Image (tube, rainbow, N blue to C red; front, top):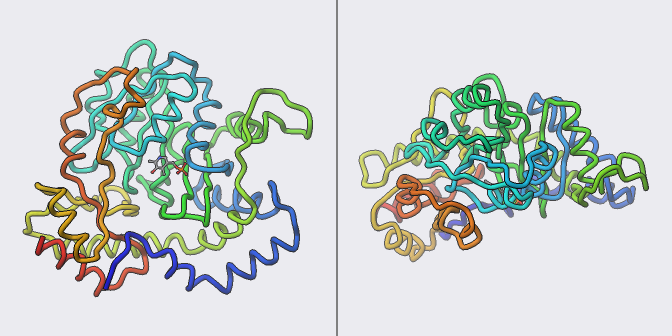
Length: 362
Ligand SMILES: *Cc1c(COP(=O)(O)O)cnc(C)c1O
């Protein structure tokens, strides 16, 4: 039995009737750009997340870009973030001319370590951009307290955390704005590219709506220079259907994580801690081990997928050669030792057992 990282085909089969007919209907309506499904999805996503505004866009990278553009952060300003993340997080910061300042992570959560943020704050710091990596919310209380003390914005990278909650609030409803990705393999994914910015602030929402549509709120009237970054109507159709199932999907991911943790307890593989003070939607289930590359090869040889997120931290990427290169010992050690296992809502007991057998015999 070969086991993929995610089973998009299996999930599609369960939704096929509903998705196919809704797509056909949207094709018949031919309102492909900012059509009725995009408008409905923006509203439904905002309601689900408990946030005043959700503005969909073309992808998660654009969502970060739009959130940063709307924030007023200027070229040369500094934004504190994690180096243990996908390139898009810091790419968007660099793209607006700002400077990513990388801070080390906590070994148990893989998220930015708030205890190390203070030392990285300078008089050019304008924002903190935490990533809720692998679906687990960062330490938002500590981050918000620092932001308040130093008058900084908090922009959340929620690309992996749709539906994850921290206390009463969903990720994306905590900071000044949140950026989501609907890349197909994300825990809420469409069938192409998609993204979304959330905010509780009306002015920010209005700016982002303009920015995503050529700086325009009235056709052929352009108030600012914007971009073309709109969610596709067909992707909105798919997301509206999947949004109805997201709680169930996230719950099932959590169950898979629990099953893994039980099977790996006492082994040489360090299982992720399942937090009890916040949600974790397990976009990824990531273990730590020694001789990671050898383990990875042995697991792959048994036709069980596994992957390294992320092998090269951002401060060591060529693209960031022009930014300061701090020493980030926890980030660097984690990049050497991390291994993500298959996880998806449709995963069976038997598949979980097969993954663990492959791992435990590696
Ligand atoms: C996927 C991802 C993004 C970018 O999303 P795209 O839709 O692929 O542009 C940004 N940040 C993180 C942490 C991600 O995992």
